[in-house]
Length: 175
Figure (cartoon, rainbow, N blue to C red):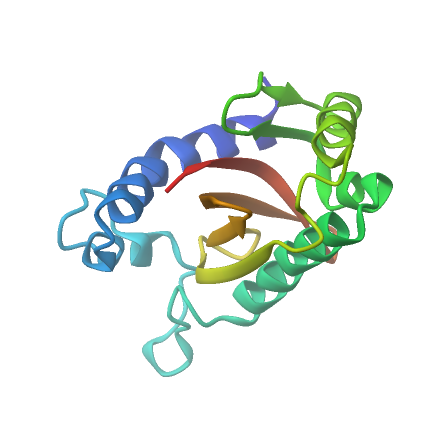
């Protein structure tokens, strides 16, 4: 397992339970550490108190949010190549009711199936609910989408590759 994959696995193991609990209950207090064993602030970069960014409003968080918005825009446009380009080469996608897709080709194939027949993606609405950084090179974005009669909850883990943010993990389920 590569060092990057190990870092992602540890990050997911530490934060996904807290994010899912918060998303299921609709209570963001779990995200702030009150009901969560994970303290997201401890994962932020070590800086002095005067210039210490909060996990939700650092520059990296805004850039990660922009990357997720690019994913949503590509979905609405029906552009499979553009959708695939928003993901890291070794990304993992877990869509509700679908087999896990790992890597670029599997992700492309998955979204080709999803976008066939215009399954309501053009009319879908997407809302980014929360963005948090987890150090200088990782971020978490939680979003909700309405696709026809389905309300979806979405969780993105992003990693910075060079100067560009890429989605490394994505999962969704019905709200």
